[in-house]
Each structure stands twice: as C-alpha cells, then as structure tokens.
Length: 151
Image (tube, rainbow, N blue to C red):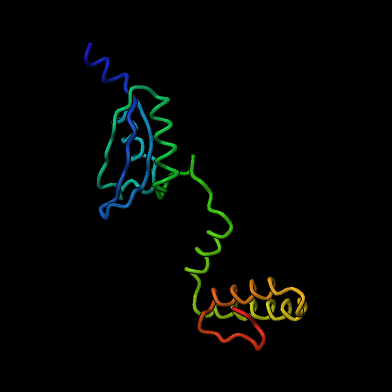
C-alpha cells in the first residue's frame, strides 16, 4: 500500500549543471524513466550534474509549481511555459552582446535620428526634447549633448 502511494505522486524536478546553472524543470510520475529519456534524447544531457526532485500530492499542483518555477527561475532548456522577453529586454540583451563597433554605429544612428527629431520638435515640445536627451544619455553617457538639449 505504501508503495502505491509513493508511485501515485507526481514529482517536480530541477536539473542543474556542474556550476549550479538550472538547465531544466519538469514534472513526472515516473521520475527515473523521465530522467533516462532526457539522457537519451537531449543534446544537453552530458551537462547534467545534479537533480533535485520534490514530491507533490497530485499532478495539478505539480504542474502549477512547474509553470511558476519555469517563469521565475528561467531554466536554460525549457521551452514550454517560458515567458518570452519583452521588446525592451530583448533590446538590452542585444545591446549587452553587441561589439563595440556595433554599439558605436547604433549610437551614431540614434544620435542622428534624435537630432532630427529634436530639431523638428522645436521649442514647443520640451517633453520630446527631454526624452530624446535621456535616450542618448542612456545609450552613451560619455557623449556630450548638442547645444540646447536638456537632460
């Protein structure tokens, strides 16, 4: 009877690499078989160094915990339930990974666009001027502003 109770549980498991990076979060009633399938099917299986599992009384509560864990902990290899980054998050990711030359080109392009918009805005729209000045400041705080810009 006790064995049946254990077998009826659903497990939430987390798979980590040797550096402690969370690779994958999943749920299964047959945890050992599921882990064996990861080893057979996943190209990242050789990265697995540690697995932690937590029992849940039913599949629904395990599923809710899985969705929340994927959303909050952002495992590297999960695709299902993964929250897609916002446009601004994608922009910052691209910026962080860009080369110095690409950043300089982007700053030059933004400065050109911002300068044209600044001139079009004239004195009647100080909000636009301020926003454009802050945008350029955020992109490159070392750059001086054109005369007349308000930070």
